[in-house]
Length: 383
Image 1 (cartoon, rainbow, N blue to C red):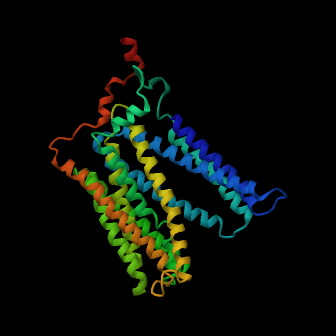
Image 2: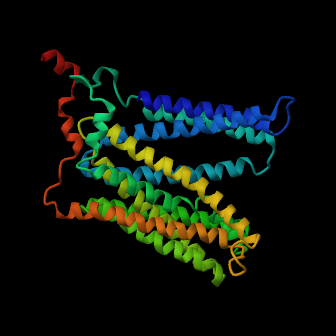
């Protein structure tokens, strides 16, 4: 709960600063412009840090509260709620900003700040009673020792590499799909919005299917691999949509990206939830969150930069006449994502094989932290 509260305050602080940064960036001030830029950077940093701090602590809390057999259902529910929140907020923001003005935008951001702190306060209310917090017995392990145990016989690094590669492979298109549809396929704003809805619908279908498959004891790494395969088909469809001038193929590919990314996210998150033992859910899920968030943010930025660099090189004739086409920048990113997804399959392969060969589930390296066990205050007093 303290981490949930700290994350909520960070996110509230970022959203509270953001309107004033907008005022400075608009030029409605006599001060230097860099103050507005610094304020905007600080606002985004606080919002991102608060969001991921709350998310990681919330996942750890859910892992501790839910029985192991319900973890797939919990992950699917959390992912569906995430998408539902994004859809509802997009509709609400769109309604508020239909009659756009700078003042209305500032009011909308401030309203989001208040709503964030209100919803998070309700969510963490009475989740952990202060008099029942487990008291540690013995010295706590150092972070380096706990991280070394998370390696789990050398597989920890492979897990994180697989998640990082897969997240980058699915996320580089994050800011490119809508402009690709508008610039290359000549789709209207309404049509590109429908493509975004197809992306979300694919994710929801993936979450529902993943919950059923994992409930039937499907290996989470195999499920993530199926998501990667769906992503390979999706990006191939996106690439071929341009020469075929097929919005239908583009929509199908967009939906498959959401579907494949959803399977990969649920599979990888469930696998890390199964590593959480002896009160170490925060460490395991924190590693997942750190890798996933860093990879997603870096991939979105790199995807946009790479698209611009390739497009500029093609327009100057540096790539030859055959590649001097409008879609070359986008397709370069999509081809790179296909290569990264193939690399993800290579990284996932030994993890799936290792699970398949095991008759009984192997204990996680975190089980070795038994020297740092937990007990309630009543148990400590009795001892």
